Amino acid sequence: MKPIKAVLQQALPRARVTERRDKIEVHLPGGPRVTFRVISAPDELPVPYPSVLFLERADPRTLAMFRVQEASFVTATGQVYLVTPGMYVDIRPARALGDPDRTRNPFSTRGRMVCVSMLLFPERRWTIRELARCSAASESFVSRVVSGLDDQGFIETEAGGLRPHAEFLFAALAEHWPRPTFFFVGRAPREGEAVIGGGPAYENLGLALPALPRAYVATRTQLRLLVVQTKSTPATSRMGEWEAVVQPLPLQNVFVPALVCALELARDPRGREVLNSRSLVPWPIHV
Image (cartoon, rainbow, N blue to C red; front, side, top):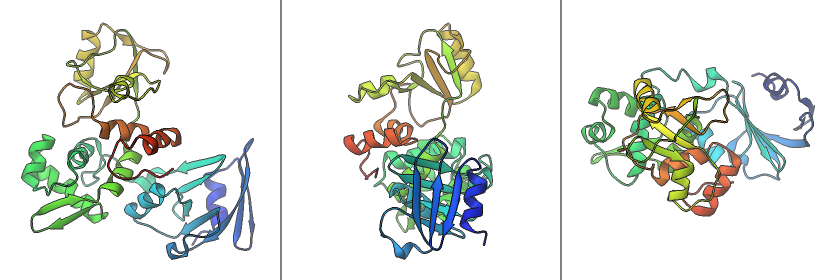
């Protein structure tokens, strides 16, 4: 197995990495110098803080669980997650995440819509037909997504149907939740014109968070129509007046629910602090 020092040096080429017996010291440029105790088995947790778990391999559900628990880890495949006061590193190489367009990948663009459907009603026992109807997808596609989720341990299948392991599925879905890629200058879309997230959705939930309005559209064709409808033009930078994501959702043109707001906020530490304080979802978000 590739040594942890070599993995960290490859993932953090500008950092100074020093190995001493069962400890590894990481010094980021202009940042803190942190010494981690290196452990090699999850059953050694908890250990004196700070520590880092070094794994030869781990399934996505396990890594999602570690991220939820804010437990630092490094994998031999190049995934690096280090979180201590003053340090936050989250590196996931493309080869570790897999191809987002593979049919069996449950976190592809359309696969995420199936995951959202399940998490909107996490206690429900779903059949493939019900899930397909809620997600506006074919039963064959939903079956492939469910198979991928089952392979990674994110759902449990029983005689009465299937049900998500909500806390772990949410953590994994948040990792793959799309960031806005289109920014515009002009009138922001209103409720009824698109599914609206971002700032207006936060305000609708009583959250005073500065954020641009975010429009969720199912296709680029819908996005072009929305741009014409709002008489907007593409922004030359990320400092537009509203933003858009091509991500179909099992929702009408309304404000996104608390679940989708939580997925938006869970992408960064500050957002997770808000989630922890406001309980937007019924399972814990550790920070």
